[in-house]
Length: 367
Image 1 (cartoon, rainbow, N blue to C red):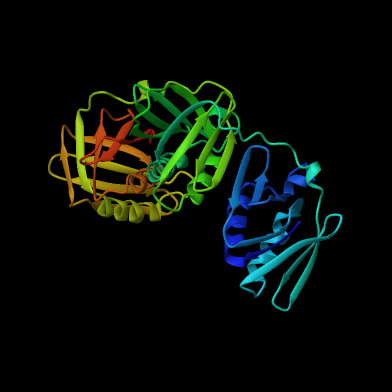
Image 2: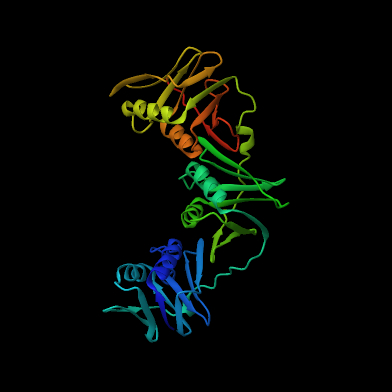
C-alpha cells in the first residue's frame, strides 16, 4: 500500500469513520481503522460490530500501489490531525509497519493485517426508501433524548422507526416521557424497527448538509447511504410497546406560551428544587399561570408566567423541570401549546401551529 493524499481530506474521512470505533473493543483489531487502497479509491472502515461506518476517497489522492492494512484509530487520527503538512505520504514499509510522512515529519506505526479484520456485509439489500437527510437529523434530535438509559428494557434504549401508509413515526420513551416525530414519505412500504440511540447520534453528527439519504432496512440491520458514506447499524431485538394509546385524544385544558419565556421561568423555578427530583409545579386558571417549586431543605420560588394564555378549569400539576426543558428545546419553536387532560394524566407539548412533533411528559404526585 502506497499513496499520497491531501491531509484535510484524509482527516475529514478519518474523523467520520472513527466514530464507529470503540477503543475498548474485546476484539483488538476493531480498535483500528481498515485502510483498503484500490486502483481508483481509498476505502476506510471503522466498526465496533454494532455500528459500521465506511467512506471512500477518490479525489485529492495519488495511488502508487494498492494494498490494505489496519491502523490504530487513536494514533492515526492524532498523527493526521497534528502533522504540519498539506499532503501526507502513507506507505507500508514492511509487513504491516506503516510509515506516515509529512513535511519534515516521519511516523512509523505498527499495523495489523487486514485479513484479521472481520468481514462486514454492507450490501444494499432489504426494504429501500429515501428521505431528506436534514429530516432524519431533526427526527433524531427531537426523539433520541427521551430513550431510556437503563438496560433492563433494551427496546427502550433505542428509537422506534415505524412506517405505514406513507407515514414514518419515530418514537422514543423511557416510560416517564415520550417524544414522537411524524414524517411523510413517498415510498409505499412498511416496517417496524428499533435503532440503538448510540448509532443514531453518530449518524446525526455525520450529516452535514441537506441531501437525499437512502435507507435499506432488513430484519437485523439498517444501512444508511449518503455522500460516499455507508453507515450500517444493528437493530435492537424485541417488540416496541404500543405507545399510541398513551397519547390522549381529547384535552380539557390548554396553555399557549412563548417558549423562551417558559424555559427561563422553569430554569429559575428549578434553582431551588431538589437536584435529584427537580420537580416544579404549574398552577393555572384563566386569570394567571404560576410556576413554583418548594424544597423543605432549600426554600421556595414562585413566578407569574405573564406570557401564558390558559383556557379551562383551574388545574395544578407537578412534573420534572428537566423533562419539560428537553421537550420544549426539541420542538425548537417560538411558541408552544401545552395540552392537559387532568391532574395526574400525561400532558402533551406541541408547536403552536404544527402537529408533527409530539412531546409527552408524565406528571409526578407530590404531597
